[in-house]
Each structure stands twice: as C-alpha cells, then as structure tokens.
Length: 102
Image (tube, rainbow, N blue to C red; front, side, top):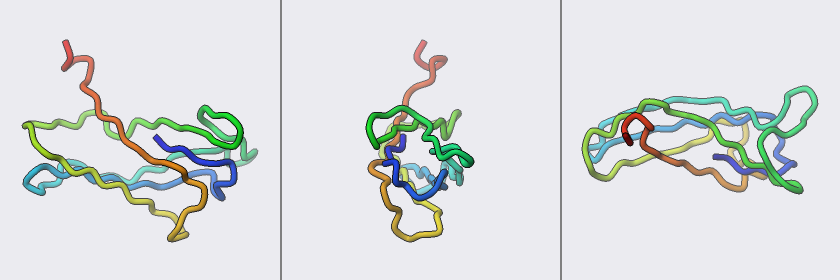
C-alpha cells in the first residue's frame, strides 16, 4: 500500500521491489508504475479523508516461498527527485493464496 498527501507533486510513483531468500538468492524483482492520481484532472485515486489517500496495488501475484526462513523485501523509489515529498507510508502485505489456504 501507499499513503500519500494531496500535495504529492506527481500523479504516479515508480517503485522497484526485490525479494531475496535466506541465502541471498533473488526470488523476484520488478519496477512498477503506480497511479496515485488522474493525470489530467489531478483527482486522487484510492480511498481517503481530508488530504490523505490510501492506495492498494497487487505487485506480485504468484511468488513462491519454498521453505520457511527469513526473506528480505526491499522497496526503492525511482523518481526524479531524491527525496519525495508527501509520501507518508509505504508497506507490504503477504498473504497465502486462496488455493494454498484450502
């Protein structure tokens, strides 16, 4: 998820994620564009109240964690500015697929 304020200066954000297993082997890596606002109107997407909006994105649909252990997830923005204004939070959620849970 991404939480941003209305004064975020862009309509989108580019985030690169990498996932490595306990041995340091790369499991997955991708650069994704995430649309936070309408490019023409500036109207925010997502849900929110006041000047804060929350967005949920599906980033990796079929990751396989083959064994128990410590995995490292790294998120990095790929924007023009080194410091991004008004991104308030970025987080991840990992859940078992419905197929696996049965």
